[in-house]
Image 1: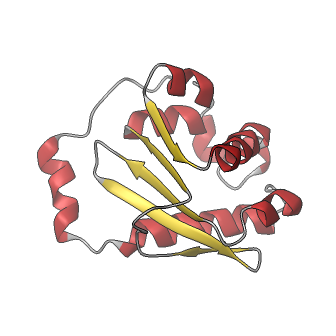
Image 2: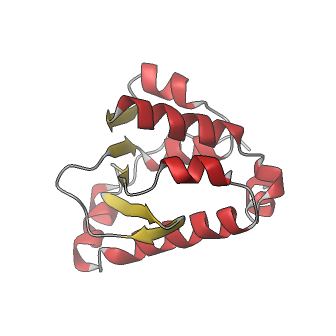
Length: 145
């Protein structure tokens, strides 16, 4: 499947202002906990994320997911003023990352993926994402279509 280049239309992106902020963070934290529980995320790598704050933002949709790791579990949090690590990209580019149509380095160097914060932490997360065998995850069926 090739994800076309698209931008979420501004009126649709503006709808988020009327919606609760927490559900995207809760959904991402739940998905990460599911992946960790199934052994997809290495325990030793998750331990390196302990106590750190993360923001993942679909910039064109103006939707962000904010989370931390506490006692090896991912938890939704309110958006920190200065997260330890921030990832920002258009929704289509995040979809391309998930489907492995693009790698993080290509998106970063073409200025389509914004990574800010702790450089070492960014490399840990990037390498973690690169190491995941998505065919072993609950998301495999979605990613095959």
